[in-house]
Image 1 (cartoon, rainbow, N blue to C red):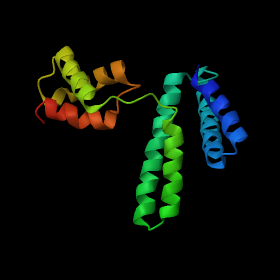
Image 2 (image 1 turned 120 degrees about the vertical axis):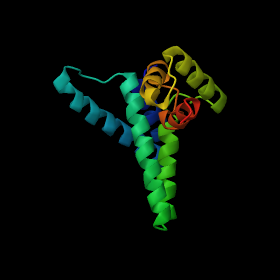
Image 3 (image 1 turned 30 degrees about the vertical axis):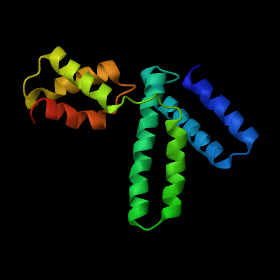
Length: 152
């Protein structure tokens, strides 16, 4: 089932269940998705693909995590909790992320594959990781691992 179909089904289910917070979060996701579709039209694409949707969802999670941090610093725990609830809903649509051991193995494999020997070649390794594992690899966590593997 495509992510678009999952959004529709989950929205219907949350509305039937009377889960206002989940319904609101899914509506927010679909609104962002429509914006992304509209933004992609000049390049000749009517609807963005699942990979682009996954990337969009990760961006939404990242911005909400930043908001949570700001709300906690501003002593607004109720707003932080609302953002965390939205993060949970958004993450339910994302593929399961690699664990630490699998990430380390993927980094070692990418370093060997690219033949990178110094920190100057970090970009090559990151590109290889993104090409192979973009959907299941948190690039923010992979960066420091690659740096360590290259002796940086």
